[in-house]
Length: 122
Image (cartoon, rainbow, N blue to C red):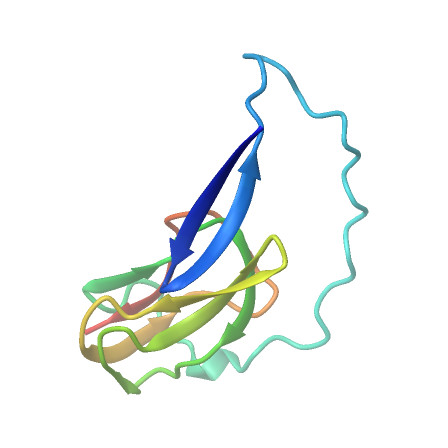
């Protein structure tokens, strides 16, 4: 087991990583699926996917915890657009540069993969 110190958006986390043999699979059981979210955010506020030229992508796989920005909102580089939950940590996904939110391409409760486009900016 190796310990590492990882910094995500200026916040340090200490993690332990265990190396496993090639082809080894964890025997941990999967959790039962949870019920669907009570209500989806307003669909009218969501523009068509990929409406802007600047992508705001997930830095890790996880679940959408909160959508901080709205379509049409001006954001500066580093402003939080979406908050992603991964391994019980809340990870802000920030605007890579100044712009205006063109689309929000996710909903609270969505499971997303690393690199998935969560929003776009113009």
